[in-house]
Image 1 (cartoon, rainbow, N blue to C red):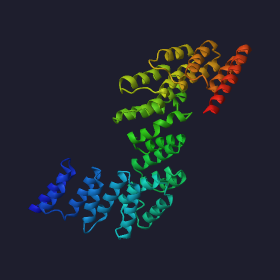
Image 2 (tube, rainbow, N blue to C red; image 1 turned 180 degrees about the vertical axis):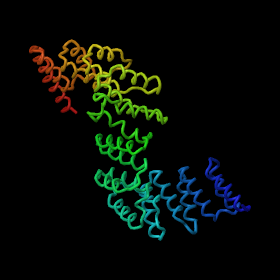
Image 3 (cartoon, one colour; image 1 turned 90 degrees about the vertical axis):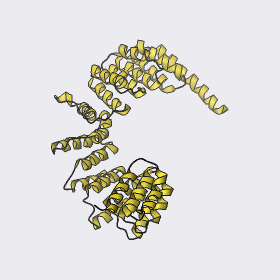
Amino acid sequence: MDCNDRRDRAWRGLVRGDGFVQSHEGCAVRCGVGDDICVSNALVDMYCKCACLDVAASLFWSIHYKDVVSWSTIIAGHLQNGMYGSGINLFTEMVSSGVKPNSTTLATILPSLSELKLFRYGKAIHCFSIRHGLDHSEFLVSAFIDFYSKQGLIGKAEIIFQFTPKKDLVIWNSMVGGYAVNEDSESALHALRALQKVGLRPDHVTVVSVLPLCNQHSRLLQGKHGHDDQAFILFDLMKRDGVFPDKVTFVALLSCCSHAGLIDKGFRFYNSMLRDYNLTPDKEHFSCIVDLYSRSGKLDDAWSFIANLQEVPEIDVLGCLLSACREHNRMDIAELVAERIFEQNPNDPGYHILLSNIYANAGMWSDVTRIRNMIEERSLKKRTGNSLI
């Protein structure tokens, strides 16, 4: 390796690191490597990652012979900084200049086309990739599956997936994620099982895609059939890969426990969320706990849980318990819950009607009349208030 090679390699390592951005370009010029395309591309990339797009663009346009990496870098820089229109315009100019995009360029531009709902342009890129033999790139296949899935064209994504001879985990994850985006939990879970059957091991991307769907799939709890619950397996995979669960993850887990009547397990997850991950529970988590108790007929415990909350429970949480009181015919708790609800929002007719129906189911007709009169009175007051405004 001669002096120039060592100098160039050292410089490329320098510009990839964290340092004083403003001094790098001048240093490159003084060292005599400013015309090196690799160095120039690295500088453009560095400025883009520092969100210095004006400087990056100025340097990019100063490059005499821009290669596909130069174009791909400046395009990616604009897109990653949210400048979708500029990125797409640069892509158009790249093609017009005679530089042929590679699979990386195409995969970079597709998410922006999806974001801007430019389906026609995405389809044109797909045709371009087929004509130029780029459509078998695993990276690009994954991008196309993601693109069509986000357009709601899951059938098109499935065709691309099925006709891809070599499917790595990235492609499988894109298909699983495509089903998840379209809220097709059954197909997502089927794809999850299928990728395991071909010898692939789900990673954190797989888990993050599927786990939020768990509480949407009524047949998820395989424990009813003598098997481990898929949601809990996914949670274990998430922890194994060092992925920290978020609040949505715990909503899914608590919902699964609720549907299965796993009270103790549900509370272990709830306490783990507080203790191990320092997450602050929201109304969704509180509602899951109330539902967990209610499905098991433990309405006294549900009311005790609400009463002991350090914060004022939101109406949605209280409403969850009020609905359970109707199912279990618990007038005593229903009246306590309704009182809390009416204190927070005395003019919501929905919960008044629900309480009236609970009284009706219990044959307490005088209370039914009282609540209905209250609804009429408060509705009149509400309409009067609106007319004054």
